[in-house]
Length: 162
Image (cartoon, rainbow, N blue to C red):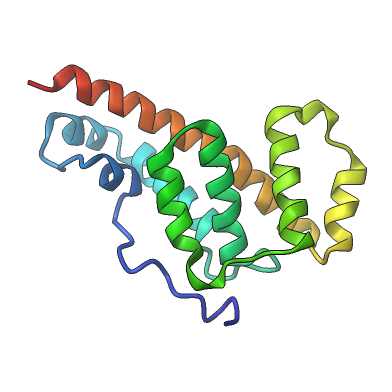
């Protein structure tokens, strides 16, 4: 399967966060989120651009999903990690390149100050272009943002539960 042939998830929701949390558009929290349509639109747009870009370049869709899964797992959001794991599908990547990407994700997240030009060069030797490495880094930074938004909304949902 080529990157271009990688299917989009069949259950791709209009809004991943609301779908994961079961937030109905007409619920109090759904209405609250719609008060800031630009925030909602940009969060969903970033998700789609980082995880499902029309032109993924040298960072395949399954690699992107594997990175997102790793970050969501590390951040402790099992539901988000499971959703990303399903995105990997049959094109599950494996091997030294994925190992290097996952190690890079861990390093960027846990000890960003220790990330060096050597880390970037190591990814480049595995065939990643600068734009691919930037995309990976953005994705690694985006998923924790998603996790925090989801955690805040979960807390709000618990506060509004009968």
